[in-house]
Amino acid sequence: MQPAGYGVIGAGAIGKSLIGQLPGKAREVGPVAAVSFRVASRIANALRAGYPVRTADALSRASVVLFHAPPDQAAGLLALLASAQIPWKGRALIFCDCDADVSVRACLQARGASTAVLRQFGIAGRIAVDGDGAALKAARRIVKALHLKPVEVSAGSRDLFDAAVTLGTCALTPLIDRAAAMLRHAGVRDNEAARLASALFQQTAREYAHSGRQSWGWHLQKPDAEQLEARIEAAGPQIGPLLRELLLLGFDTFDRHAEVAQRLRGKVTPSE
Image (cartoon, rainbow, N blue to C red; front, side, top):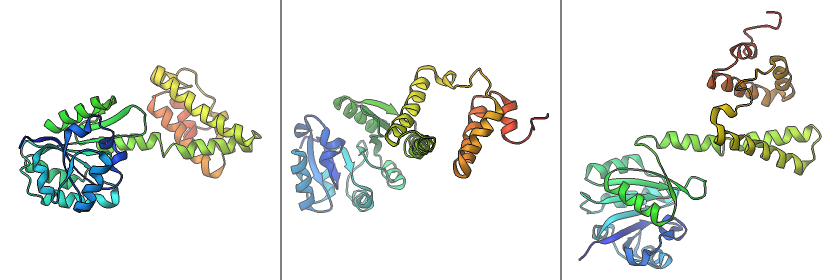
């Protein structure tokens, strides 16, 4: 039998994942496996492609295996895949829109498989890619077929990449919310405060994208330490210390205005 382009093993809403978005998938998907034949049938119907199989062993009919599962179902499905009688040498396994268990990934790599991860990370039109060998090549083909722009992450750096994404998304949202709250406390109307806070962060991001470090407002012009202290105090006991640390992070990161940083650290008094 001629090997299918893709085999699929998964759980959850695969039709809404990258696998479900593949163009021409009806011509390329072969065996579809899951925790049961019934679930596999449901997945094949949702994809409108491939055919359900009773065991994960049948994935050996495909040269590239696509994996997708929500976090609460991933472990069981990965165990099923790891125990399957599949000759992995020369085959590729691609995790689509889900986390790849490091130990299982390493186990399959030791058996000859190449692996890759394709995951959307919140920016429309872009997708994070990391992998090796045939899996990386197949992942690139999938990205091209989906008309997305790949952001390739170097081997072993997935956690660092995710940390950067977290810093720019979930970790940033509370700062925007606090900025909006301070604007409201300063007399700005509720709706306007939210829009204004959002606009400030967006403008800063746009300027950074255009000019990089030179977009920092104090790249050349030295800020007044006393004014900064007044702003820190006005921010209150919860946000004030955080604001101080963020200001110091800026001075340290951009290596500017050491004397102002010393003042904020309390190492230099105004009389000095």
